[in-house]
Length: 261
Image (cartoon, rainbow, N blue to C red; front, top):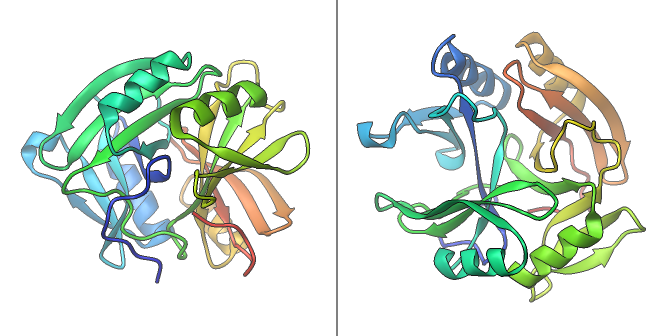
């Protein structure tokens, strides 16, 4: 089992969460959907966390869901990138042409966070670990196994994240690059996503590992999700799904040689 109990290296996708409407049974639907799709156990935090609910797989934190605090807040999985010093990272974000939309702030004793937008329009979080390191389990069925930045300007995205986190890249043709930390550790990918609709912003796309792509996609559909696309990658079969509240993600059955988080 791929578990962890120490902070993730800077630049690593280290956590995800998604906000749902508190009304119209949004949180209720999300709890029901993800507990049935992935077998997650849900645990709501103390009152001061505003309903923030951690999703556990095999008793390790795998993700979180929460009620929206703003009507304009989209329902989308947010990828957080680890940092050892969120304030210093925010300064590098600004210097590299990104925007800081939520300034660094403490989250009780869990850690310190900020939210940013890269120069190509992709929203992401920064997380400096305190009591909460982020993922306690990855690369197992029903947990996160990969994150891809979907962008219309791959060269600009590569330059930005290299400046902020020291990323290097393993180029896979003109439209895809595998992200490496300065020590060579593989942590994700970037895709020139020319297929994005004009009104769809650049974003980080979360991939969940599953034992069987087709079975998981069918379960998701029966629970109210839409199957947007199924396809076979060089590393295993995958399906692009959209939850009933709008969040987009993939379920992926990785082959033994598939790159992982």
